[in-house]
Image 1 (cartoon, rainbow, N blue to C red):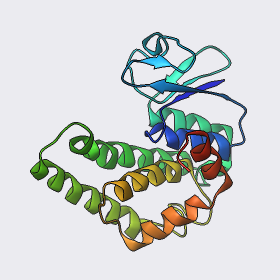
Image 2 (tube, rainbow, N blue to C red):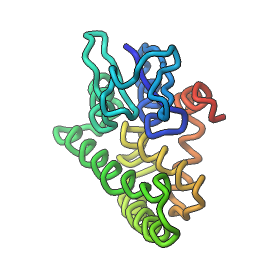
Image 3 (tube, rainbow, N blue to C red):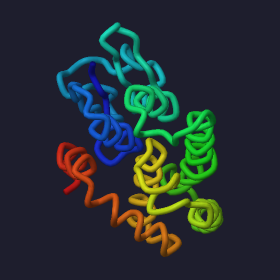
Image 4 (cartoon, helix red, strand yellow):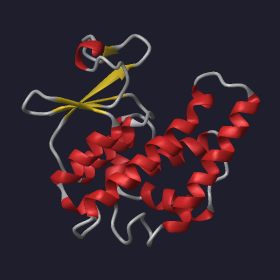
Length: 194
């Protein structure tokens, strides 16, 4: 299995989850400007969307999109999803919220938005993160154990810190807790972020 990432991008969520699940995989860094992989391959031939993440399974099938990859990883290790008959559904609900309501809101910061657009986006990000903070069931989104959604939320919180957007105190504490996890340290170290 081969995982394609760009340092500090949203693919870090999948990178962390792969380590949390203790899955064996190869890494390949992608230059998002040139669309070339670290080994010189054309990334567009691997993922025609041209962005990360991508995960090529041992079957040869390639998955893309955080929600799909994180869901697949959580299906390999049930500890990464909430328990119960609705556990996977609640995981997908959280992943979709993080992807569509938080991740997409960063666009003005990464696509040359005006100061006004960035201010509006920052306010939306804080509002959405406040919802997650208010609905957390413990140290992590679903209680006492880390989930695939926590991995994604953590990356969004790294971006918030980098952009000097105020996050709710509970989520700042969550970010610090996540930083102590071996899987986070391993993925961030591999990506040159520590």
